[in-house]
Image (tube, rainbow, N blue to C red):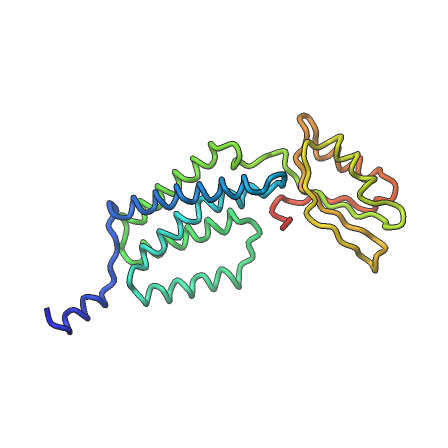
Length: 227
């Protein structure tokens, strides 16, 4: 084989077959699961968004599928950059779980577009398996009793100390996500991620917080609405 033939062969894009790609993606999921569990355990008493924890486990599988599809093709790599730029700058996604599925859709679409149909089917099956496994793990399962609450109070009349007894009555755990002053210091805003106690309801927590003297507004947020 002369230099020209070798250069032409190297320039041709290559894609791993399903039997070669499966171990790589399964290993990616296993390592992603370890990363997600390690992240969850490293937070001690904090309450992270379940979607973020689960996304850490599923993203390595999706990214491995993307890189396998790209192979050694420079054209595919530039096409991927353009596709991701559209998602990044033109679409606002609040949930890490939603972003994971956007990447998943892109990866499968690219695989189908280059004719790697068996690989696209294999990737879809493995990601589906990853989602099912994540749903069976208690620490990664979305929690119905996990809410985020923002409370705005008059700074001269009320503070966090007056609100904590209410949280103690309605929540088993809570994590202060942010605290800031508004209106030139006249109003204080506190945001907590709260794990409700057994039998407690978000409605009762909001009603009792709103009844504290000095509280101006109580807002229930989606879990993804808090950084």
